[in-house]
Image (cartoon, rainbow, N blue to C red; front, side, top):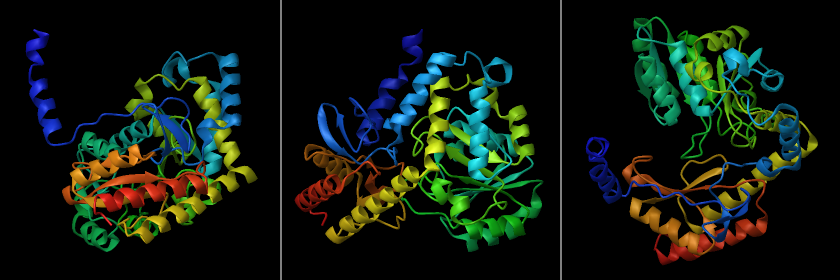
Length: 396
């Protein structure tokens, strides 16, 4: 019965492969570093979100080990019942202080944080004004909410204002939500203008700081701090899994918001709590960001970003509108992107191809992400590989 019921999978998988949409993830063998070993090959790693190298930092390792010894390997329950440990409370207090909000709530992932928060705040009588290039976790949260979803053009806040003027008054509540740094193009949202629209039309303002946490703002506090919008963004989502080097997501905002999510957000209510090692390491990461060492790591990240971005542009590659450590190398067709990625890997550089449907059919690219872990030698090596392969494929 099972084999018959799932018989459609062969055809579906074959169709996915024919269209070139299938994923064949490479296997990391060892640490997630600026240079790393994937599938038995040492490469310059331009595909990691480990922006500051904290995944491997001695202070995070030590905090994780100590937490295991003191609290065990797991939490053993969901947070609302028996899984909330002192470590969870302490981490959330740290996050709230760091973000300058009244409170914070940790979720098992950034995806869960977006999904659970959006579907808790709005419903069938409401509207969501969603940036057209928002992350899939926002999109899924919007769909699950049952609210009407209105997309607004990428970073076009004037178009957003017109849409709100036409539609906002038709609904009970409105949520205005955007990524801070867009994960495929590396550009930054016009958050100040977005906040102004939210205030003008009585919208809940929400920002996804997944790629801005640890990257933008003082000591990596994120986009709200970067744009000096404290008190003007109602819901801040951030991650612990990228620049902070561990795992999970969080929501930071008012005390009432967090108390409400504790009652309503299904991923929080129904998922086992973070293990102690992860929580302790995340707390250590937040502490480290607020030291001179943390400041130096963020500075190095941005120095590397400018160096590598300028190098790609000087070679003649199209890097789009990137303003962050995420720099796409846009090459048009999916075939071009796949060939570029594969040939770069042979040359010792891992830069993942991104193709339709993740991006438009004519906007396929390899996505590069630099980090504080990279040396100038690493980045120079990568630029030389891009130069060689780009010329071979007649992309430059």
